[in-house]
Image 1 (cartoon, each protein chain N blue to C red):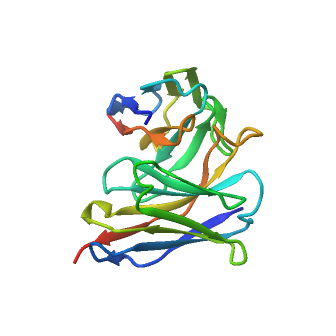
Image 2: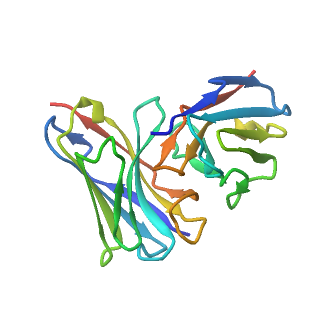
Length: 106
Length: 126
């Protein structure tokens, strides 16, 4: 099973700041990595798939990068609605999710 | 726009069978390029993929759960289902159904879960 490790576990930032979230895979996932946003009491929402492709409705301030085992989700300028938990997910070998990064207001 | 809705018992006794159904509206589960998925989330924890069933009816189940999981689809009712047995308290979780789209022609890798049900909390308790 491919293990995805997300860091940091918690990120404390202010609106307007830049957020950088990391996801490291235990073995290569090629480019088959996605990112999700989850708010309390809601289902996750797909933001990015295949490393860098934005899902329908994903704002341009969200961008994904990386390859192989190391990936990054960047939120260029945090908006109030971006404070949430973010998960990475791979589908190179079966499907696994990372443990999540909570982006909270500083 | 496709919508998914989970239904089924919210309370299941230990050693019994958890059965959930996901009814899809706004799109056909037979449409090529989509896999119909079950994902769970223990309260306050990360997401766990249970498995999915392809648009052609082929199931793919997580190796960690495959001995206890059965997936099926009913194209006449445009719904798909999950059975997990036997259950223990460790199976208490929010259960989500979701649609996965394929990003490549082979559908073997990549893509993402682009539509989700609201989720249902299933508690395993006597």
